[in-house]
Amino acid sequence: METRKLAVIMFTDMVGYSKKVGENETEALQLLAEHNGILRPQIEAHNGHVIKTIGDAFMADFDSAANAVNCAAAIQSDLAERNANAEGDPIEVRVGIHVGDVIYREDDVFGDGVNIASRIEPLANGGQVFVSRDVCSLTHDKLNFPYKVVGTHSLKNIAHPVQVYEVLWDPSREDEETGLMPIAAPKNTTNRNIALAGFGVVALAVALFFILQPSANSPESWGERLAVIAFGDETGDENLARVRVGEIILDAVSQKFYEFPHVQLVSPLQISKAKKELKISDEDLVNDPGLLEEVSSRTKGRLMIAGSVSKLGGRFILAAELNDLAHENPLLAKFRLNAASEEDILNTMIDSLCGMFQTRIKDAFGIKETTPYLDLSIGDLTTNSLQAYGHFIKGNQLYKSGDFPSGIAEMTHATEIDPNFALSYSMIACAFSFIKTPQADSLSWEYFKKARQFKDQFKGISKETLIFRGNDAWYDAYNDDPDSAKVYREKCGNSYKLITELYPDDRDGYYYYGLYFRYLEKNETAAQEQLRKAVELSPEWFPTYRDLAYSVKETDGEDAAVVLLQDYLKQYPNGVGADYARQTIAELRGAN
Image (tube, rainbow, N blue to C red; front, top):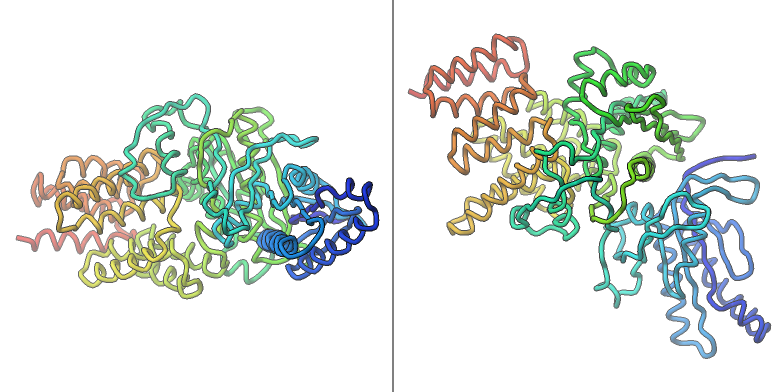
């Protein structure tokens, strides 16, 4: 019987064993028995399974990348302690770990997932643990071990170069940490300088990426536009339907590609707008390639990702395609991953799927890996809880549509399920700030303080991360020291401005940048320019009109502001923002 699944594969090898056998077979066998007595119990203790042994080499699989890395570190620690205290020859082991799609047949395992792990292991020396980028991305910042870049290696019979990292399991080597592997900027990019002071204290990798990003004013310098369009739910599972698993996967894949600098992600708001105009659901899209291409075309996306999640027996299957619509035969890649539990959808499957798609994009467009970016796991970017993510998705959609109270309630529920859901705290704070009452402003600050507790989690260049960093600097801009206040104002403005450059078809960057000019810089002309761009991209969303109206009142008078809001009501008399518009008109007229 043959089965295929995503698995974490570990290979180990005892350094110098063959030579020792030639010198003294009896002593070599004694060392091997001692070696086996250390490795096998650790593998079993970390939920691993020894698939086979060949002399002094072990091949094992694990239920998670974290367990595999923890196991390897424990093995090396035990061996180091043994070698320090034992007389005679030391026992030194090198370890290689990779996570990938593998085939189980009878008592053996095959596939690239196995081959890559087996070829990473010989790159290490005794006492070292080497892992692939996939393993590093799944465990980065989740374990107590930092990572050190080893390099990109072309492995025998493996089609693509593999990024390799060393696990620094020895605490004395923690200062060797280098973070994530450098990878390439898009072809034909032009450098632009962005002041590092504009982004606060962030990881060096992020700072370097900001410097090397191409200018939004030169579209030819960007990578191709990618539209992440739809993931259908074909599981028939009531729980997954309740949490909106298809929408969760859609959002999670988008979050992963926000952080990938070699494409320009089409705004999810524009994807939703196109679906609404066509009056179609994600299930409709997944089953109709023509509709998928129509949505991608409307949003000017060349690259397109769509897929579905299904359930077969007790296993969950995530299938997706990456297409390049510039070609007659558009299929670039098609992957099918499966896992035993629904928790693996967030914990491993999405990270693996996106990693494989990103590798395929780099191969297809000849992108070389030379500049750094942060490859964060979806759990680091959002949450590992499907239940929490489901409430966040629903709440974020309500908030983005203008229904702030309902959106806040759903996102609050998300934080109750996962008290570490930093992004949800940040979005709740934003939603409260748009209600524009003293009580709401106070609650906005309270939730933003909660988000600030997880400040280190807001890494990378996603829109939501940049909003958080801009908001963070905004609050610090009310500093009694004029020089400090000026620095924070600049940080705030630079964060919001970067959103407009990285995601020029998303309203939020222009909206926040407009608020920055209006409230921090007191520049109504610049504020109106940005707010009108936000209105063009999302004309039904009322908060932009409200701030635009008050800005227009300052420059053109009350009547002009009221006319602006009356025009909004004519277009959307029954929209979510209609009552807010009427309330704002009353406020403007009562101001005098």
